[in-house]
Length: 124
Image (cartoon, rainbow, N blue to C red):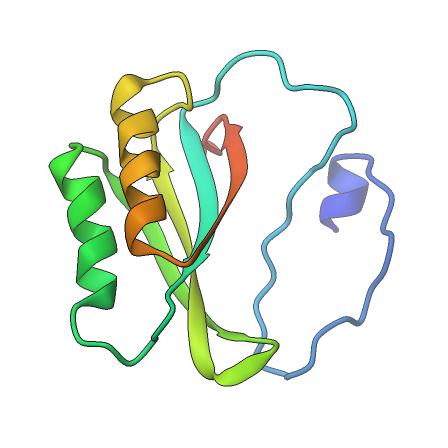
């Protein structure tokens, strides 16, 4: 339905590995985005997932930078199902010094950080 609505090509369907999976859709482009957007998405994980305070250390980074988190979700790591990684969305832009500082600090408390980018928040 989303592909029809936004005139997009479905590359692959039926990818779920569980019936309870939920899907988020991203529109990707080879062309650089113009504008900064107002919401960013990233993924991160820790060296030791079971260490007390690991998640708090990340939440603290964003709180101290005054950044509003709009989503945090854990998912099993494909290479190590006993551990988990996290998706995180927050309000901001990569050009904002508070965001840049928070991302620098995040890299000191997380083992892996992948920034997916910033985009205009969907209007409902």
